[in-house]
Image (cartoon, rainbow, N blue to C red; front, side):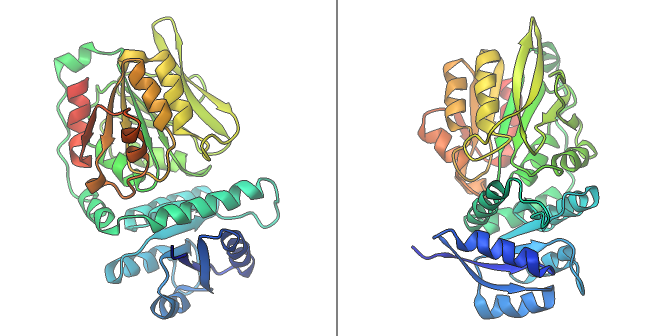
Length: 349
């Protein structure tokens, strides 16, 4: 099997070296070159024909977003954005996702060696996920997400079912997929819990961005937040997992530090296992695009507990990994296209 050919584009020589060393240690990846700015990168793309590019957000001569837009217009290819953990960096990186990047990774801290192994694993995993991305599907999603959508109208039946919970897991390609789903759900949709694989510092900006676009209230989850109709809670990236808890008739979330589960934190598996335990038949589970198998066994436990589970189909997935694994286990009740998922959720409710 051919190795994944990677071009690293970053103005920092130190960061280029860190990323090169991390990626080169994996037997399935070959770093074919590095570039200090987009103009050098443009020449090396033609010369080296990489499968994946890692791209710094902030660079001299031409910023990463401008370069990304030019690249996607001329030669769409998988791009992993490398961004500093700052508010400005998070906002810019979300703009990069809008422009066509398929993954985000936090820029390695040059002066900090804590958690280096986890950072290296994250970079490798995201490059491998990006290499599997269906860029044709993703380009159509990006285009569709910029167009106006009609928000589903609230129905009286939905208003009565306030005990329902919708739990969603997603990864590569999931930021655009989530936006497409959430923009089409009405204000009285049952409470939603979402795990989207993102580094620390980005989920707050992502939640705020969705909150400005969607009828529901979208926010980054905090420990103790209630799960209520009209609100979607997104698990914070970083060192914690998000779990469903119940006190009497009330649902709330616990956000708690913990180790990586299925190579992720926050993990879809952790959320889904807790949803199976405390939500049971009140739950509608949704598995969106993503690499790997995070959440597959948790979704099976949800089904055993009585939930109704939906998976995104292969044709509309950027990476048909997580849905495929859940389907293989028999954890899914219905497989539908991304465009059909919002109505399928409402029908299930």
